[in-house]
Every structure is written in structure tokens, then in C-alpha cells.
Image (cartoon, rainbow, N blue to C red):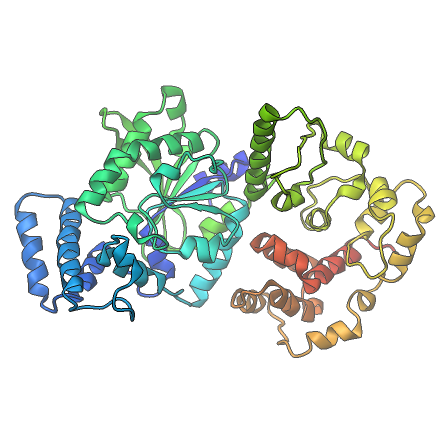
Length: 529
């Protein structure tokens, strides 16, 4: 397949921003409605006669309104009639006769929408399960997400608790926003029914504050390309946002904009990535080229983006920015010079309330040599075995990091042992550890084999991938791989371990099955008998 614009993003090593529309939720959630379908099913709650809704639609169309304007005005009509029917006790939304949200002034229609979208479930098929697994792995490759979707698919099934979610537009530049590892739900969310944007008046208020969204996009675009997923070029609301955004860019920023502003659009039965150059006209009348990629194979899109290898995950970047801001804020109010050493993997566990912090800036090797390799977290070592991207000094690893390694610890060590140039036999604990982990049977003893004995025997790689993708639990995924290690090459084992590690780094490091799989890779590749 020829190189695509997505490949160029990978080569640039810049984590993209995703701008996600309803097409993504429609692809992965069972019976997810488009806008017309949503209005129709909403109206059926108050009137079974479809001709009545068509009557309103026909009147609006005859006024010369656009499809977007027709739908917002239909939503207004439906909300008014829905709310009237609710207050007349003709329809119910709760078992409680007078729910508290009514007293808060929440629109019954929006509460209906909230409950409806909260009940959306994943559409399971071999294809969608595979795509969702690859989409989920992108959480360490994506800078931030902007979405117009109300549902919880992204925060519940893709980015989990790793990304901070902002529901209201006034939160876009709040003190808790760091422009990384964040989801901005610019049309509201089912988590707050009042925030949902659907009626004519909702969109009027949205238009008034659209400049906030443009400003946020400009902030994000300074560091990242923007990839649109699940939108149509005919979406008038998004067209307005895009044209206003592009109209704010300088001529220098518009150079090669088509490589940094990409639409992934759905084209039925298109199994490749069909790249097309299109033109968008801004409100100032300037024609700007952008790139559209048509496909029905989103696995290819996710596979390419998953090749992005940031030096630090967006979640860690966000925590780092949070800590740096805290240091700056504290420095104004306190002259206390005491400090603590902060490791990247401890960022989310730091108490910021009462302890002054310090940041060390310098070359990695200098800092490691000064403060000791003993600070290195386990997951950094596993990442190095899988990706070979840390370039740790073997002598320091053997003599410092593994200085007090217990014999029952699960850590890959042979990569560093094999490359050490100093006399590492002085580290007696490491020598004991090596002697107790230098064969496959020692890494995977009989009691562990019994734990995975009931898991299926699989000999085909594609079948193994399919089986693993149907299971959400990382330890169970790794258990299936552990059971069938002998049937696959070390490269295949590594590929699956990388997928698991990128899918959920924290759960992987809690999984003894995963750790044993990586230790097996290390044994095969690096142990000298």
C-alpha cells in the first residue's frame, strides 16, 4: 500500500488530536441512531402518527431552511411537546413520581435523551471487536479528543479513566485543563442532561461560544495534527467550526495544512485507504486544501496511528504539566526550598496539597547516574524489553537496579546481563535470581501451568488474536498467550505483548501472566546457556 498522510504523521512523531463525530458511535454502538432517526424515535414517545412529524418537517423545508436548521427546529418542537406530555403525566421517565431533577429545572426531553444514550451497548462482531481493541490501544498515542457526541463510548470503552473529560464549553480553559489526555464534549454529555445541545436555542448559545472551541483547537493544533473521524462533509455545524478555525491560521500555518488536517470518512466496502485531496473554503473566501481518506477498514487507520511512539504517554504529560503548574503556584506563596524526587510513574499518586516539589531537567543518563538506576519503575524495564526504546546502561542495571532483586520477583534481566561489560557476579542476589529464572520451566512453573490449563489450545495466530480480542481482562488475555507460547514465534509473542501493554499499561503490570510472557521473550533472545 502506498504511503498515506497518516504515515507522515507517524514519521513526524507528533501525537494527533482526534475530532470525533456520531459516525464512530454509530459504527460501534448497537442501533445507534443518526440525527433524523433520533428525532423520529423521540417523537414516537409522544405521538405514534409519523405524519405529524412529517407535517412539521415539510413546513420547515418549505421555508427554505437547510437540513441542519430543519433538524434543530424539529428538536425544539419535539422538546416542547415532550415536556408538556411529561408534565401532564402522559409519559414517565422514572419510577419516582416527582424526581429531583425536575425540581432542578432539567428538561424532561433532555433527560430522556440522557437515559437513552446511557443504555447504548457495544455492537459485537469479529470486525468491530478487532477495531475497538486497536482503537483502545491509541490512548497512549493521542494528544486529546474533541467530540460532538453525547454518549459515553469514548470515556467508557476507549479512553477509560485515563483521559479527563470536560462537558461544558466554559471548562475548555479552566485551571484543570492541560491540553493533553483530555476529552472535550462540546455538544454536552449524557452525564449532565442540561449540557446537551440539540434544539434551535441550544445551537444559538453554542454559536455564541464557538470562539472558545476555535481557540482550543488553535492551542491544540500548535502541537498536533487534527484527524476527523465519524463526520460527513455535509455536516453544516462542523463545516462552520472548520472554516472559522482555518480562517484563523496564518499563511505559514496553512503551508502543508493538508498533511495536518485529515478527514477519515466512511465509504462502504472500501477495504483500503483511498486518499483524496479536497478543498474547504473559509468564511473569508480562501480555498484551503485538506486530505480526505475514505475507507470501511478502520483497522488500517488504527494500525498506522498505533505506530506512533511518543517518548512519554499523554497521561504522563498531563500529570507532569499539573505538577509543574503546582510548583509555580506554590513558589509564589512559599519560600520553602525542600523538595522531593518525582518519578514519572508516581505522578498520579503524588500528594500535591502540602509538599513542595522540585523538577530535575537534564539529559536522562546524567540524571539516572546522579540519582541512581534504583529509581527505575518496573514498567520502564518491560517497555524496554518489548520496544527497545530506553537504552539503559547494562552495567548500572545489573549493579544498581537489580542490586537487591528478590528471587521471587518477576522482572526480565537477561538483556542487561548479556550486555554488561563489568563484573556483575559481585551482585549475589542477581546471580541467585538468574539461576532461578534461566529456563522456561522456571519462569512458568507447574503451579502456573495449572492455572492456565483450562484455557483453550490455539495454534493459529489469527485465531489467537481473535480470542484475545473478545476478552476485556488483561490477565486473562495474557493467560491465553502464556498457555500457547510454544505455538508461536518470539516476534508474534512480542507483538501481542506490545498490544496488551499499550491497551492497558497499569493492568499489564499487575498481570503475572503478562510478566512471565515478557520474561520468556527476554530468555529466548538474551540468555546465553
